[in-house]
Image 1 (cartoon, each protein chain N blue to C red):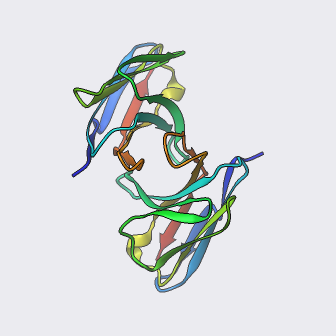
Image 2: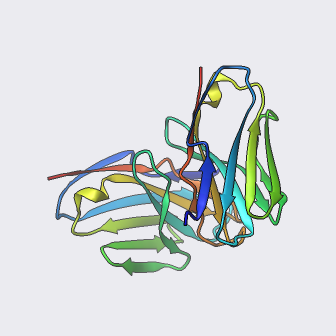
Length: 113
Length: 109
């Protein structure tokens, strides 16, 4: 069983489109995250939810909107996609927001043309 | 500002030992993680240090000195499959994980 899963794995789309990436974890964790990893390989936190509540909201364009329907799911919706949004997006989860190890999903490679 | 520094790339020989250094300047400290990331894959957890000293786990060891803002990851008996990026990350006072850019380790036969 996959612990943290993301769909789709690859996403190629045109500038200006709206797209969503879904994430699910079956680890029973309370905390979930979205990261962006660009071509320079920096992992940058975007959002974090704990028990469906937003706890970290970094300086991210408001075109990005996370949604957590329940503790096991954290989806990312992106409006009006731009070329600079091309990156790999990783979902992760941990038992709590504090010291626990984060477990990562396989990543979604987004290419905006 | 918050900063994590690691070498960009290192090369080592199969069977040898390599040490990957990480220095950090963060607002507070609640622990330091090392993750391994193979090309095209997700990061996977290697180690967590919150107290000074060396933590050994098989071929991998991680060292921390909080007073120096310094950690290293030591890999022994290198295997070709150890070729990957190694990411250092620090949990700051807000329990937010600050990531380094990673060190790409190339293993040669």
